[in-house]
Length: 260
Image 1: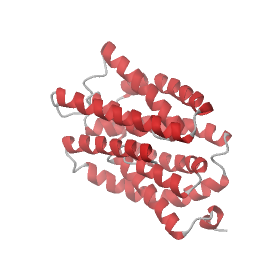
Image 2: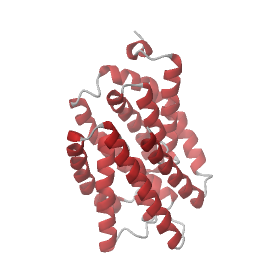
Image 3: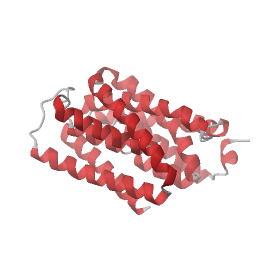
């Protein structure tokens, strides 16, 4: 029995999933946040609950490729600040899922993304452009710690309830003053660690099993060309355009969640 028969999906539906997987690879190595479109495609083609389990290994495949490409540019002090807050956000997200329906989840996350995108644009317009480099300019001190904790909780919350933590963390890294390569390297390690940490929970909930992994094996092949194209594109995107694309992808994701 082939993968398409196993999931009762048509050729066009598999093509849509393959495109979404390609977009995951691109977003992980170029414009983080763009994979909110992938999330929507997976949820449209597959049952909503099952789609989260199928998407997670595809995301991890993209994370591995991103880490391989940008591993030298990760900023570990920032990562260490974020992880405790992310863990708290995951707990909050778990409690939220106990009573919230799909509509409440989508509306809450969509509103959070749009609000944070607006705040990020406002902050970027008020601040001077940072100098080239990988080091952030706003992750130390009391204000930096508060910011990291706030975004960390929101990132953990959104990734737990809808695999939508990418835009939140993208906005944090932009607001902290990360340049392009530092942004990509730090986010690559962040999401690899967070997504791998979610695997046991997904297995326990029955979201990942042999059937889902069979589909993942087919879709992972499409992540690679997306990542290669993303790496090529990232080298040719200047900092200002990079920031605008990240914010635009976040806004699209937020609107998409509100309208679904």
